[in-house]
Image (tube, rainbow, N blue to C red; front, side, top):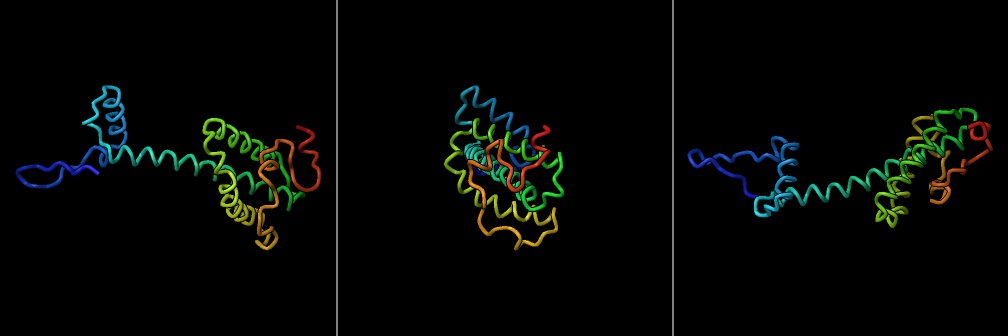
Length: 165
């Protein structure tokens, strides 16, 4: 991390642009990169932000899988409450996961780990939205990745909602 500049008269650290205006800092860093002014770059913060971007993609994948799994669980365990909204959520999350993996193919090896983390949260989502006790749901994910991502997979009893749309 770069040492903050100081005001020579008072020896008080001058806040750096990264801390005071993040957007302006990003624009400045992009400009410096374009101009190949390597020595002017805020390398410490730039490295941190690039690493953070990668972590955000993993988090996005887990979040999408969480919502998808939560809705698949609701679909299976509360068939009487199925709705077009649930169907739309399942379809949209599948599309979003697919697009995320297409844009970030290096996330594919992370899918199994993401599935395990997402399942635990998906159960909590289903419990919160169905009022079913947590013991209703299996301790381990009952669906494999292929099923979760398969457009035609809807667990439990067949539904007219899927056939109608």
